[in-house]
Length: 337
Image 1 (tube, one colour):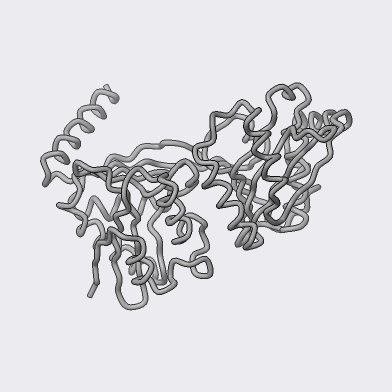
Image 2 (cartoon, rainbow, N blue to C red):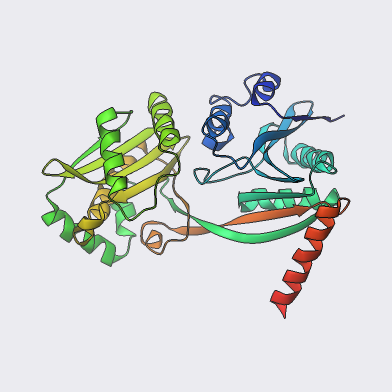
């Protein structure tokens, strides 16, 4: 028997989960109740939380959605969420497939359309199968990319030797004349965070979506020993900064920026080499994850580009779902002509 429930309150979900959504249980940063609560607290999700939970003996699945109104839902996520997927506790592949089908079936009649992203390949396959089997019309599209480097068992010299010669030569040449002082903090440091914010404000990047959320994340991950915050200064002025986390064998690059007026000196490249060396030599991860986005420069630092997907799910039993499915089918037909 599968016990299926819908929640519209994170407190109720946490009580029902009985610590199954805590840091000690969930390996992924994006699957933890503290991450989801922070999204709600800072208003980052596209709507109020709406959570589907399916449970059987020894296995539980959650799908965290945001109710956008008018019969529409989306992933309970934001631009800070580098990967979205169902959240699991226990179970084998057969159990998980059954639980996903139960969630897909339980959501019919509740929403006419659900949009989920960014989904990695393994999650999108399972979701597409489960929702199609439950009667949803599924539109799957590649939406972005995730670059990674495989560094298990490698020292920095081995990793660096695999990089293109133009990158290595640029880093060496720029480091010689950069005049940078670089500090890497393994915990939260208020002065270093102020320097990061100063760099970001002077960079080419758009305004930070939620500085308060990001600082809270840095404080939380710093307290857990997972934060790696690097700041490069020249003559006391911050010119480049990066924010990583390292946990469970994966080093994730969340944020990096340099002051736009420093572009010719490539402080970002110089800082990246130092940061990669520090993390590979000190933390010994198996994987370095460059987050979302298919920026051309990432290919020089990384080994593999992995696609990320968007699933748009239409419930043909609802008027809105049927209309949405029809529009999507027509758009696909026109694109294929």
